Image 1 (cartoon, rainbow, N blue to C red):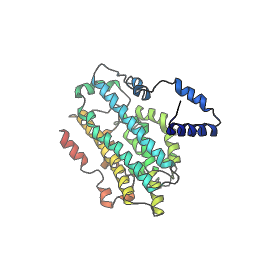
Image 2 (image 1 turned 45 degrees about the vertical axis):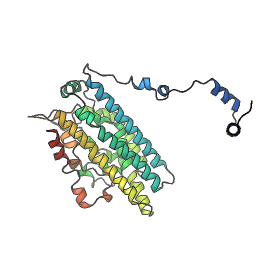
Image 3 (image 1 turned 90 degrees about the vertical axis):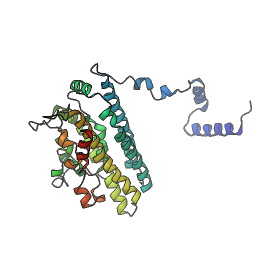
Amino acid sequence: MHFSPEIEERLAQLQEKYEAMGQDMVSYLDGLLHADFLTYWDYIHLDTLLSLQSPKTPFPDEEIFIMYHQITELYFKLVLHECEQITAAQPLSPEFFTIRLRRINKYFEALTHSFDIMIDGMDKEQFLKFRMSLLPASGFQSGQYRMIEIYATDFTNLVAKDKREELRTASIEDQFEYIYWKFGATELSTGKKTLTLKQFEKKYAKTFIELGRACAINNFYALYKQLKGAGQSNTDLEDELKQLDINVNVNWPLVHYKSAVRYLNREPEEIKATGGTNWQKYLPPRFQKRIFYPALWNEHEINEWGKGWVEKVLKEVK
Protein backbone atom coordinates (compact mmCIF):
# COMPACT_ATOMS: atom_id res chain seq x y z
CA MET A 1 0.00 0.00 0.00
CA HIS A 2 1.31 3.42 -0.92
CA PHE A 3 0.95 6.24 1.63
CA SER A 4 0.81 9.87 0.58
CA PRO A 5 3.63 12.14 1.81
CA GLU A 6 1.19 13.77 4.23
CA ILE A 7 0.31 10.43 5.90
CA GLU A 8 3.97 9.37 6.03
CA GLU A 9 4.83 12.69 7.69
CA ARG A 10 2.08 12.25 10.29
CA LEU A 11 3.17 8.66 11.01
CA ALA A 12 6.73 9.82 11.53
CA GLN A 13 5.55 12.56 13.89
CA LEU A 14 3.43 10.06 15.84
CA GLN A 15 6.34 7.65 16.07
CA GLU A 16 8.53 10.44 17.44
CA LYS A 17 5.85 11.50 19.92
CA TYR A 18 5.26 8.02 21.35
CA GLU A 19 8.96 7.13 21.45
CA ALA A 20 9.60 10.29 23.50
CA MET A 21 7.03 9.01 26.02
CA GLY A 22 8.37 5.44 25.98
CA GLN A 23 5.16 4.21 24.41
CA ASP A 24 4.45 1.74 21.60
CA MET A 25 2.78 3.56 18.72
CA VAL A 26 1.35 0.34 17.24
CA SER A 27 -0.67 -0.28 20.42
CA TYR A 28 -2.20 3.18 20.14
CA LEU A 29 -3.00 2.59 16.47
CA ASP A 30 -4.76 -0.64 17.47
CA GLY A 31 -6.84 1.36 19.94
CA LEU A 32 -7.74 3.84 17.22
CA LEU A 33 -8.67 1.01 14.86
CA HIS A 34 -11.13 -0.56 17.30
CA ALA A 35 -12.61 2.66 18.70
CA ASP A 36 -16.13 3.72 17.72
CA PHE A 37 -16.70 6.99 15.91
CA LEU A 38 -17.53 9.82 18.28
CA THR A 39 -21.07 11.23 18.17
CA TYR A 40 -22.30 14.68 19.16
CA TRP A 41 -24.68 13.33 21.81
CA ASP A 42 -22.03 11.18 23.44
CA TYR A 43 -19.41 13.92 23.38
CA ILE A 44 -21.55 16.41 25.31
CA HIS A 45 -23.39 13.74 27.33
CA LEU A 46 -26.65 15.02 25.91
CA ASP A 47 -28.91 12.32 27.37
CA THR A 48 -27.50 12.95 30.85
CA LEU A 49 -27.79 16.71 30.44
CA LEU A 50 -31.44 16.50 29.40
CA SER A 51 -32.25 14.23 32.33
CA LEU A 52 -31.05 16.65 35.02
CA GLN A 53 -34.38 18.45 35.51
CA SER A 54 -36.32 17.11 38.49
CA PRO A 55 -39.31 19.34 39.28
CA LYS A 56 -40.76 19.19 42.78
CA THR A 57 -44.29 20.10 41.68
CA PRO A 58 -46.63 19.36 38.72
CA PHE A 59 -46.55 22.99 37.51
CA PRO A 60 -45.07 22.98 33.94
CA ASP A 61 -43.21 26.27 34.31
CA GLU A 62 -41.05 24.91 37.12
CA GLU A 63 -38.96 23.17 34.45
CA ILE A 64 -38.26 26.57 32.88
CA PHE A 65 -37.07 27.81 36.27
CA ILE A 66 -34.77 24.82 36.74
CA MET A 67 -33.30 24.86 33.23
CA TYR A 68 -32.58 28.57 33.26
CA HIS A 69 -30.69 28.28 36.55
CA GLN A 70 -28.72 25.34 35.17
CA ILE A 71 -27.84 27.40 32.10
CA THR A 72 -26.74 30.23 34.39
CA GLU A 73 -24.42 27.95 36.34
CA LEU A 74 -22.86 26.69 33.09
CA TYR A 75 -22.17 30.29 32.08
CA PHE A 76 -20.61 30.88 35.50
CA LYS A 77 -18.39 27.86 34.88
CA LEU A 78 -17.30 29.44 31.58
CA VAL A 79 -16.46 32.63 33.49
CA LEU A 80 -14.45 30.73 36.11
CA HIS A 81 -12.59 28.96 33.30
CA GLU A 82 -11.38 32.38 32.13
CA CYS A 83 -10.68 33.55 35.69
CA GLU A 84 -8.36 30.59 36.23
CA GLN A 85 -6.50 31.30 33.00
CA ILE A 86 -5.98 34.97 33.89
CA THR A 87 -4.71 34.34 37.41
CA ALA A 88 -2.42 31.48 36.29
CA ALA A 89 -0.81 33.28 33.33
CA GLN A 90 2.95 33.70 33.71
CA PRO A 91 3.71 36.31 32.62
CA LEU A 92 0.36 38.03 32.21
CA SER A 93 0.23 40.38 29.25
CA PRO A 94 -2.33 43.19 28.92
CA GLU A 95 -3.49 41.60 25.64
CA PHE A 96 -4.15 38.18 27.20
CA PHE A 97 -5.90 39.83 30.17
CA THR A 98 -8.09 41.98 27.89
CA ILE A 99 -9.15 39.11 25.62
CA ARG A 100 -10.19 36.94 28.57
CA LEU A 101 -12.05 39.82 30.21
CA ARG A 102 -13.89 40.43 26.95
CA ARG A 103 -15.00 36.80 26.95
CA ILE A 104 -16.25 37.12 30.54
CA ASN A 105 -18.18 40.27 29.66
CA LYS A 106 -19.81 38.50 26.73
CA TYR A 107 -20.92 35.67 29.03
CA PHE A 108 -22.49 38.11 31.49
CA GLU A 109 -24.11 40.13 28.72
CA ALA A 110 -25.63 36.95 27.28
CA LEU A 111 -27.01 36.10 30.72
CA THR A 112 -28.36 39.59 31.31
CA HIS A 113 -30.06 39.74 27.91
CA SER A 114 -31.58 36.30 28.40
CA PHE A 115 -33.01 37.06 31.83
CA ASP A 116 -36.33 38.07 30.30
CA ILE A 117 -36.99 34.33 30.41
CA MET A 118 -37.15 34.67 34.18
CA ILE A 119 -39.07 37.93 34.09
CA ASP A 120 -41.71 37.24 31.45
CA GLY A 121 -41.17 33.59 30.53
CA MET A 122 -43.09 31.99 33.40
CA ASP A 123 -46.70 32.15 34.46
CA LYS A 124 -46.80 34.35 37.55
CA GLU A 125 -49.39 32.30 39.44
CA GLN A 126 -47.55 29.06 38.72
CA PHE A 127 -44.31 30.58 39.98
CA LEU A 128 -45.87 31.85 43.20
CA LYS A 129 -47.14 28.33 43.89
CA PHE A 130 -44.21 26.11 42.94
CA ARG A 131 -41.68 28.42 44.63
CA MET A 132 -43.07 27.37 48.01
CA SER A 133 -41.78 23.84 47.34
CA LEU A 134 -38.23 25.17 46.98
CA LEU A 135 -37.79 26.46 50.53
CA PRO A 136 -35.19 27.27 51.79
CA ALA A 137 -33.18 26.97 48.55
CA SER A 138 -32.34 30.24 46.81
CA GLY A 139 -30.35 31.52 43.84
CA PHE A 140 -28.48 33.41 46.55
CA GLN A 141 -26.68 30.09 47.15
CA SER A 142 -24.70 30.14 43.89
CA GLY A 143 -21.17 29.35 45.04
CA GLN A 144 -19.73 29.87 41.56
CA TYR A 145 -21.02 33.45 41.46
CA ARG A 146 -19.30 34.24 44.78
CA MET A 147 -16.07 32.75 43.43
CA ILE A 148 -16.26 35.04 40.40
CA GLU A 149 -16.54 38.03 42.73
CA ILE A 150 -13.47 36.89 44.68
CA TYR A 151 -11.44 36.50 41.48
CA ALA A 152 -12.58 39.93 40.29
CA THR A 153 -11.37 42.23 43.05
CA ASP A 154 -9.61 42.77 46.36
CA PHE A 155 -11.54 40.97 49.08
CA THR A 156 -11.94 44.31 50.89
CA ASN A 157 -14.25 45.52 48.11
CA LEU A 158 -16.66 42.68 48.90
CA VAL A 159 -17.04 43.75 52.53
CA ALA A 160 -20.32 45.47 53.48
CA LYS A 161 -20.15 49.16 52.63
CA ASP A 162 -20.21 50.46 56.21
CA LYS A 163 -17.35 48.14 57.26
CA ARG A 164 -15.03 48.52 54.29
CA GLU A 165 -12.67 51.17 55.64
CA GLU A 166 -12.58 49.69 59.13
CA LEU A 167 -11.57 46.25 57.83
CA ARG A 168 -9.35 47.33 54.93
CA THR A 169 -6.21 45.82 56.51
CA ALA A 170 -7.95 42.96 58.35
CA SER A 171 -7.41 39.28 57.55
CA ILE A 172 -9.50 37.49 54.92
CA GLU A 173 -11.20 35.57 57.75
CA ASP A 174 -12.23 38.77 59.53
CA GLN A 175 -13.37 40.40 56.31
CA PHE A 176 -15.39 37.32 55.40
CA GLU A 177 -17.50 37.77 58.53
CA TYR A 178 -18.71 41.07 57.05
CA ILE A 179 -18.90 40.11 53.38
CA TYR A 180 -21.76 42.03 51.82
CA TRP A 181 -24.03 39.14 50.81
CA LYS A 182 -24.42 37.86 54.38
CA PHE A 183 -26.50 40.93 55.13
CA GLY A 184 -28.85 40.07 52.29
CA ALA A 185 -29.71 36.74 53.91
CA THR A 186 -30.93 37.73 57.32
CA GLU A 187 -34.46 37.24 58.59
CA LEU A 188 -36.42 40.38 57.91
CA SER A 189 -38.04 40.45 61.36
CA THR A 190 -35.16 39.41 63.67
CA GLY A 191 -31.97 40.14 61.78
CA LYS A 192 -30.74 36.57 62.42
CA LYS A 193 -29.09 34.40 59.79
CA THR A 194 -31.58 32.56 57.60
CA LEU A 195 -31.34 28.81 57.15
CA THR A 196 -30.42 29.63 53.55
CA LEU A 197 -27.32 31.48 54.74
CA LYS A 198 -26.40 28.84 57.31
CA GLN A 199 -26.53 26.11 54.66
CA PHE A 200 -24.50 28.23 52.26
CA GLU A 201 -21.77 29.00 54.78
CA LYS A 202 -21.54 25.38 55.87
CA LYS A 203 -20.92 24.25 52.28
CA TYR A 204 -18.75 27.07 50.94
CA ALA A 205 -17.19 29.23 53.70
CA LYS A 206 -13.88 27.36 53.74
CA THR A 207 -13.69 27.40 49.94
CA PHE A 208 -14.35 31.15 49.76
CA ILE A 209 -11.77 31.98 52.43
CA GLU A 210 -9.11 29.79 50.80
CA LEU A 211 -9.82 31.33 47.39
CA GLY A 212 -9.68 34.80 48.93
CA ARG A 213 -6.23 34.05 50.31
CA ALA A 214 -5.07 32.55 47.02
CA CYS A 215 -6.28 35.61 45.07
CA ALA A 216 -4.85 38.21 47.44
CA ILE A 217 -2.09 39.17 45.00
CA ASN A 218 -3.52 37.96 41.71
CA ASN A 219 -7.18 38.92 41.66
CA PHE A 220 -8.11 41.06 38.64
CA TYR A 221 -7.77 44.37 40.50
CA ALA A 222 -4.37 43.42 41.95
CA LEU A 223 -3.16 42.25 38.53
CA TYR A 224 -4.37 45.46 36.90
CA LYS A 225 -2.53 47.57 39.48
CA GLN A 226 0.64 45.53 38.92
CA LEU A 227 0.46 46.06 35.16
CA LYS A 228 -0.29 49.75 35.60
CA GLY A 229 2.63 50.13 37.99
CA ALA A 230 4.87 48.54 35.38
CA GLY A 231 3.54 50.89 32.68
CA GLN A 232 1.80 48.02 30.84
CA SER A 233 -1.86 48.94 31.29
CA ASN A 234 -3.90 50.31 28.39
CA THR A 235 -7.30 51.79 27.63
CA ASP A 236 -8.74 48.55 26.26
CA LEU A 237 -7.93 46.69 29.48
CA GLU A 238 -9.42 49.45 31.63
CA ASP A 239 -12.56 49.57 29.48
CA GLU A 240 -13.11 45.81 29.89
CA LEU A 241 -12.59 46.04 33.66
CA LYS A 242 -15.13 48.86 33.88
CA GLN A 243 -17.59 46.91 31.76
CA LEU A 244 -17.15 43.91 34.06
CA ASP A 245 -17.89 46.17 37.02
CA ILE A 246 -21.13 47.30 35.40
CA ASN A 247 -22.11 43.82 34.21
CA VAL A 248 -21.64 42.13 37.59
CA ASN A 249 -22.44 44.90 40.05
CA VAL A 250 -25.21 46.80 38.25
CA ASN A 251 -26.77 44.95 35.32
CA TRP A 252 -26.90 41.44 36.79
CA PRO A 253 -28.38 42.48 40.18
CA LEU A 254 -30.74 44.80 38.34
CA VAL A 255 -32.35 42.08 36.22
CA HIS A 256 -32.82 40.02 39.39
CA TYR A 257 -34.43 43.02 41.04
CA LYS A 258 -36.70 43.43 38.05
CA SER A 259 -37.75 39.79 38.34
CA ALA A 260 -38.33 40.12 42.10
CA VAL A 261 -40.49 43.19 41.55
CA ARG A 262 -42.51 41.36 38.89
CA TYR A 263 -43.25 38.34 41.09
CA LEU A 264 -42.88 39.50 44.70
CA ASN A 265 -43.88 43.15 44.79
CA ARG A 266 -47.51 43.03 45.96
CA GLU A 267 -49.58 45.43 47.99
CA PRO A 268 -49.86 45.97 50.85
CA GLU A 269 -46.72 43.95 51.69
CA GLU A 270 -43.99 42.43 49.52
CA ILE A 271 -43.78 38.63 49.31
CA LYS A 272 -40.67 37.19 50.91
CA ALA A 273 -38.03 35.47 48.79
CA THR A 274 -37.75 31.67 49.15
CA GLY A 275 -34.58 31.99 51.21
CA GLY A 276 -35.93 34.84 53.32
CA THR A 277 -33.43 37.17 51.69
CA ASN A 278 -34.03 40.88 51.98
CA TRP A 279 -34.17 41.43 48.23
CA GLN A 280 -35.45 45.01 48.52
CA LYS A 281 -32.17 46.12 50.14
CA TYR A 282 -29.86 43.39 48.83
CA LEU A 283 -30.36 43.65 45.06
CA PRO A 284 -30.46 47.39 44.17
CA PRO A 285 -26.90 48.50 43.20
CA ARG A 286 -27.29 51.92 44.80
CA PHE A 287 -27.67 50.40 48.27
CA GLN A 288 -24.71 48.01 48.16
CA LYS A 289 -22.47 50.36 46.16
CA ARG A 290 -20.27 47.38 45.44
CA ILE A 291 -17.52 48.43 43.02
CA PHE A 292 -14.70 46.14 41.92
CA TYR A 293 -12.40 48.82 40.50
CA PRO A 294 -12.92 52.11 42.37
CA ALA A 295 -9.72 53.63 40.95
CA LEU A 296 -11.24 53.49 37.45
CA TRP A 297 -14.30 55.58 38.34
CA ASN A 298 -14.46 59.27 39.21
CA GLU A 299 -16.13 60.59 42.36
CA HIS A 300 -19.36 61.54 40.61
CA GLU A 301 -19.69 58.09 39.02
CA ILE A 302 -19.14 56.40 42.37
CA ASN A 303 -21.66 58.66 44.11
CA GLU A 304 -24.24 57.97 41.39
CA TRP A 305 -23.52 54.21 41.27
CA GLY A 306 -26.69 52.43 40.18
CA LYS A 307 -28.86 55.46 40.85
CA GLY A 308 -31.84 55.73 38.54
CA TRP A 309 -31.79 52.10 37.41
CA VAL A 310 -34.19 50.94 40.12
CA GLU A 311 -36.72 53.69 39.41
CA LYS A 312 -36.55 52.82 35.71
CA VAL A 313 -37.27 49.15 36.45
CA LEU A 314 -40.20 49.95 38.71
CA LYS A 315 -41.77 52.03 35.93
CA GLU A 316 -41.23 49.26 33.39
CA VAL A 317 -42.93 46.54 35.43
CA LYS A 318 -45.93 48.54 36.66
